[in-house]
Image 1 (cartoon, rainbow, N blue to C red):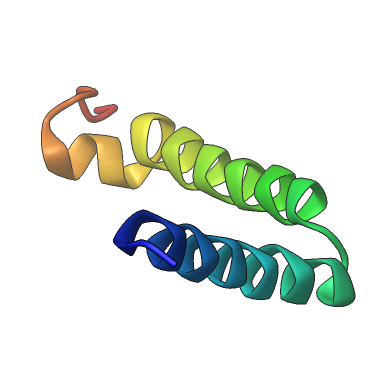
Image 2: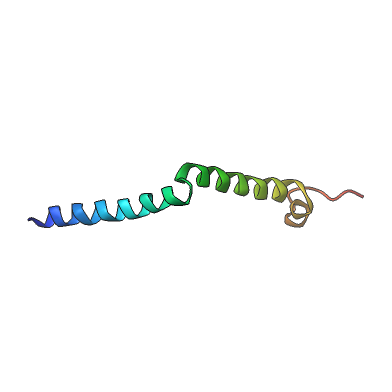
Length: 62
C-alpha cells in the first residue's frame, strides 16, 4: 500500500465515524436546521430588543 492509500483509508474511517455517529443521534440535517434556527433567534433578539439599544444599533425610546 502506498502513502496515499493509507491516508484515503484514514479519511474514510473519520468520515464514517463522524457521519455514522450523527445518524444514530437523529441525523445531521435536522441538527443543522435546529442550530440555524437557534442562531437566527439570537440574531433577531440581538438586533431588535434591549441588546440593540445597548450596542447602539437602535435608539432607545423616550
